[in-house]
Image 1 (cartoon, rainbow, N blue to C red):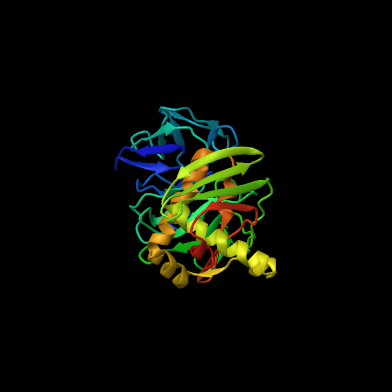
Image 2 (image 1 turned 90 degrees about the vertical axis):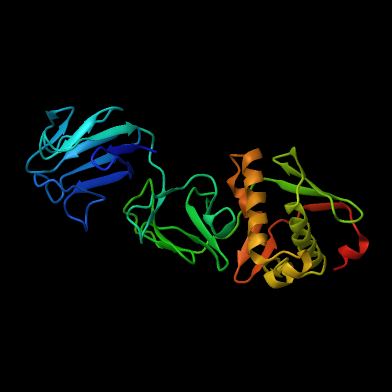
Length: 315
């Protein structure tokens, strides 16, 4: 992600796809405090292939100590120094020209760094995953909580127990698209095969994705998946409607696994990270596990279970 170094504070600024500099706190993404700066002084924009600087001020903007023409976009290069309003103003240094990324900007603390969104992100951290964020099949970022999944729109507030952020979209910074519920739509052929020891202590998993077998090995979180998969299979065999198959109350799931709710969330996160690591291009696999208020379920019906304890299968 592109960055700009403020040499006065020695702090790095992550650039949004449209980043405004000025003295007006309500409209500027980065505040300028020198008296020569205008309320809305200049902006740096991503055009799809490079970063451009545009001056909109009264006193001018300088790249490498040379004034640029007002209203004319100038391409930035790594190492360029930018001064807003005067040649003796403190410089900002253009350090990275990477493409913009969607991000979460902290609301309570202006000094806290934004959270860059890439792959799968959990908040507040890996050991307490209250919220999970990832890109759905349509490349839209979604937020998954215990209430379900919503698409993220620019400016949407996201909160954990102790912190809050607002969402900034890399491609549509000023989007006003209405958030809506998303539904899983795993289009590629996927089959899962569990191999379970007689005492249920060892669970291996193999996934057949686009007709290619991928061995996920033995992991502790595979046992949680096994329970969810058995519930889906049982409901399917009982003729329960697809929309209601497989849902398990989280308190019941805690009893069956001996895990508290937070550790169940950690196990789900670890499984999703494992999937993304072995199949980076298949973000839709994250939706193998679905949520709604107080419940979880396995999204697939194409599951094979080999071995295991016959008494456990009947639970």
